[in-house]
Amino acid sequence: MSLLTALVVFVVGLLSGIVVRWVAGLAALVALLLVIFGVAAPDIGLVNFVIERYYQGNELLFLAGLLFGLDAERTREVVEG
Image (cartoon, rainbow, N blue to C red; front, side):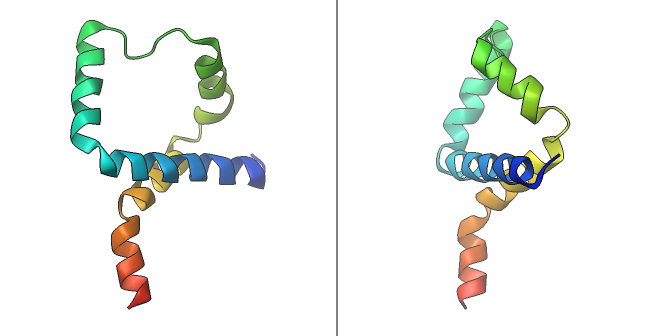
């Protein structure tokens, strides 16, 4: 994996973490409903391409960005003093 790909996956995870922090309750409810109704992964060509090409095998890097994004506010407070 190239450095650019790693950075892109991490940034996507970071942005996802920030969004999840803002709407965690709603996102969890929607995800649960999608799983229950069996439409958790709609058949959209672009989404499938991105998942197959970049996400698979990079789950831990995505998760690192996600977790960093979730805690970015607290991290900023600690770093700034």
